[in-house]
Amino acid sequence: MNNILYQYILRTIVSNTILVLFVLLSLAGFFEFIAELEDTQANYQTPQAVLYIFLRLPNLAFELLPVAVLIGSLLGLGALASNSEIIVMRSAGLSISELSSMAAFSGGVMLIFAGLLGEFIGPPLDFYARDMRIEARYSNDKNQFGNEAWVKDGSAYLHLERINSEFEFGNLHVYKFYNDQLESIAVAENSGIDENDDWILENIRETRFQRNGVQVIESQISIENFEINSSLLGSSLAKPLSLSAREMLSYIDYLKRNNLDATKYETEFWYRVSRTATIIIMPVLALAFVFGSLRSSGAGGRLMIGIIIGLAYYLASETLANSGQVFNLNPIFVTWLPSVTLMAITVFLLSRIR
Image (cartoon, rainbow, N blue to C red; front, side, top):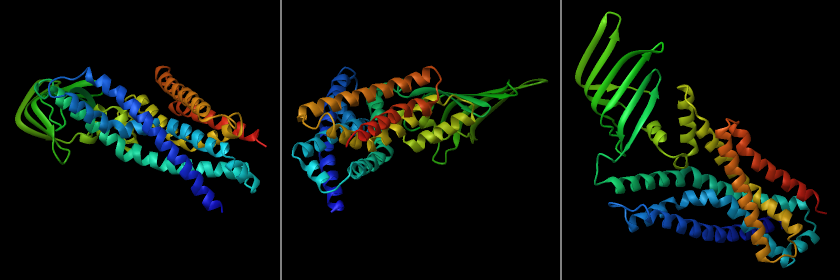
């Protein structure tokens, strides 16, 4: 009997969540498309903008999923309450804790889906979309195509003139230090990373500063083994939204090993984890509202409550995450505070149900 009810509630919540997510994605995609039309240039025109938005939809779905689950759960469970189906379940002997576990189970199923979406599907497609966008906009001007960057590798600082999707850098300056003193400066006319993550430097001229003078060494080609590889370099250029959790952890480790500030990426990592974990709370919170003030409300009232709570949670999460970076607060604390608060409210509301 319980297995049937688990499946029934799961089907109710998931079907309503999919409908809500479709509506939210349609609105978000439309507004992003309007914004992209203002940036069309060169080979980046309306068809490319449509493709760009389409490729970013999985990442947008991952970001919107907690709110979609909340609204979908309110609509689905509210419909069951309006049809007296939840009352029948209670009359059949189901306790509040059993109903809560069924709602949490539905959230757990969607949590697994969100994890797969946010780890393996959304980030790589988002990275490809942004790379495609840049390449289309600057394909007619190779001098502007790519990104200038500074990276640190132990005691060496690398200045890359231009980085494109093929990891070709153009001019490369390498500054090596020893005991906080400049040891050498090397300039390569062309540089890149091969398939073995070796750095290939062409027409390199290195100036070494020694106690008895300055030594200049020139060579046509040099192969270097820097710690930073194509994966880490790509992570340094990509937006945090375009990185999976595994890539962020790898890049955070690189930043800490090189005594660089990793607060931005730590905050994004823990924000993503806490936001994903909140998905399992949302159906239980919806159940608490359905038993409480929304028992006799219509779909419009439940929809409005879901939107208000979802917006409040989203704004609080974004504000705390950004404030944590500005005021150097603990990333774990500021990112988990909204989710813990939401859980506390859920427990409190459930405790008042008789």
